[in-house]
Length: 118
Image (cartoon, rainbow, N blue to C red):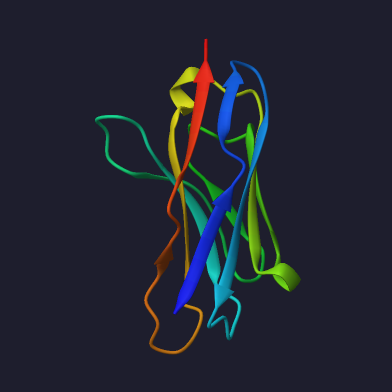
């Protein structure tokens, strides 16, 4: 089993910045794609950003130019640097990653709340 633990959420004013981290532990046998999703109240969970094993990143149109995803393979950790935050960025941010070994499913973190005040 693989566990993903997120950190870094909280309350920030509009226009501010915040960095989220997600560390994988447990049965991590290989590099895996890692990404961030978010879910706002009353809305479906959506992809925010994703980074492949080789470091190729892609972003939702709504965050392009404001958010940057990166990874530290030695630490099995993915980061999401968020800048120029807007109230509509508010939501629970989830880390998703995998598969970390042959036959594994994707793993999800427990989520971290990000609230952007206007």
